[in-house]
Length: 135
Length: 152
Image 1 (cartoon, rainbow over the protein chains, first blue to last red):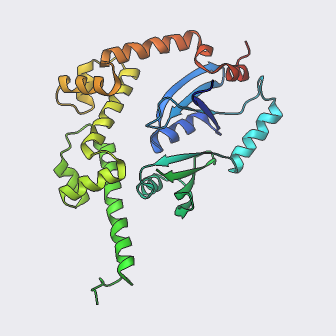
Image 2: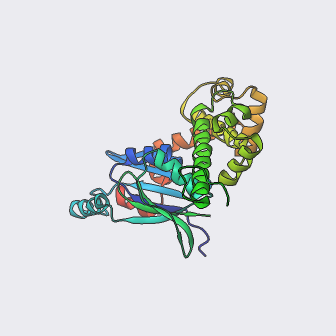
Image 3: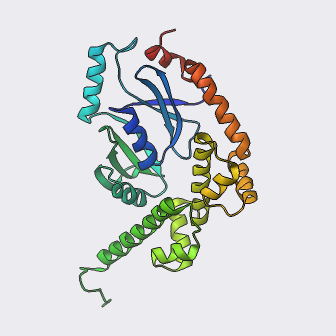
């Protein structure tokens, strides 16, 4: 019986730069950062209040799962900024918007009232977009 | 007719400006804590940074961040203490001092309360995981994704 979500994955253009963004800018906690082999790393972070869920910052690379063409296609999609991965939550969207903007985070739109509540959309430093909603 | 400050079209615009001003102040104070957590920070100092009354300041901070400014400061100190324990061989007392605690007793008590482990237990547990990750990294990632990067 499935009980929990433990890992989710976000493709990024540079794992080290993404790690800096997610920890120093978004305030996520580093969970793991270790090499898996030459040019391969396992890097994961967690939102501050969900340390049991790891967001793995992946780089699409040639290997058993992707051939070089497919890896390049995934990286192109990331660079195009069309991939949206998940929805984050915050206790106060205006304060979070203010703070993240002051740290240089690109917001696609400001906090806006929607049928499901206040929300805004922002990008990480790879171009991926995310929704942010107020809890 | 209610008095509207010069420069504002109506009460609504004035209220929005005040709200934005206060938000900027509270966020600015949080960022001040982020930069200055190692130093002794008193509520009066934070309040002066925000330029609002102490009661209002604490109430507003808590309404936004769900914890008091003091609790936020302590959480930052514990967070950086954990990083120091994981990434350095500095003594517990040195780390206690480095992250801004006045007494090692209060540091250790709070650390245990937050993490469930003493600083030394935390450090030893992390070191054990690091050693195991270096020896056998595949054991620390989900099986299907291990296949992507390192076939069995």
